Image (cartoon, rainbow, N blue to C red; front, top):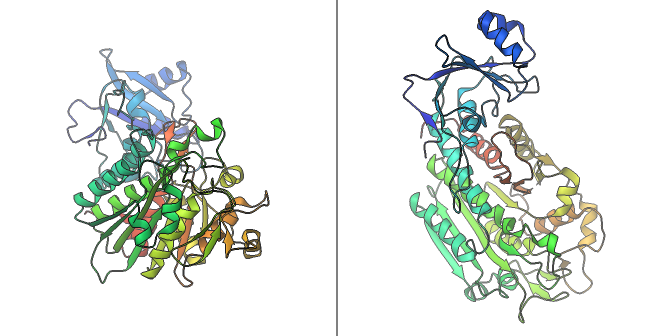
Length: 469
């Protein structure tokens, strides 16, 4: 992928990015006729606005781009995002970095803005290419953009073409490309190898459930394990969803997509970690052998779970994978899941919820999220709510009967399967943009991927993930 970033600057039209809060700078950097032209078109350097300045021969001589005056306006990640689609076809170059601008972030924003889901329809429009900004970490930009594009493509693909077998095939492709060990446990083998809750959730589908296990890196390196929710389609099971509730359930495997993209980036960067990806992949369907309300399932950890609701299936497949992950005692354990509507009610679609059992880890993730403009918000693992998922006949219930604190009780359920002392973070994501913004088109989004990459790289020896791998 070239992400419309090029080396050849021959004939490239200069782009001048201007902050709205500093109109005095316009006089220093623009000619009088350019300022008159901008004023005549109503250009005031609002974020994302642009004006095309003609040259003396009537061709395109310069582009003025507004940065606005919000936080990070001076050269933030999204300053150039979307310009590849709005500028006329041709070559462009940054005349100078905006004050405080980071060439790597600017290039990454441009790259993310070139994304289009083209599996079923060719991309239309576009055609503008940017000369690589001087000083940009090309390897990092390409690595992160490829990871985000992979995750977006997987989530955007409908369940008809992205079932458990197809998603596992994508995981196998990533593993093979990076020289990682790949193992897949399918169908009734899950019961034989003691992954009973993954099997219980997925057995009703004609598309067999499975657990993908990818291992990469030096044996003596710090262990980092990533776990996901990979529900390729969620009907709700016998506790069937409504039509509106079921409509977007092709994206219920977004945790797997983000984990695969993140894992690909970590392996491609050769970060000094022992990386393990555990991907439970299922379809939650309805049939004669479907899991029933008030069934009791024995988990890999040995705890028994009463099924209060078959539509709370994500935490069931996660709990077996988390129990297996804990066996290795990793230095860092992270799970990513489109787990609860309660998190969306509390935080909305753009702000994933973060739960962590370690304050230092939570602080590091929050700092990386802010630095990378990949936001999340910490919610509490409020132990007094643990009694809300008690069961009278089993060790715990997979849901609470209370209408309150749904995201917290789901996280507390998962916490039961993480061994004490393992730094663990649970990310409850929507993984979908309900509205288009520069660099973030409507549709699938790899929420938390960039923040996690930066945090993991920083935690294990590479500040901010900036390297030349």
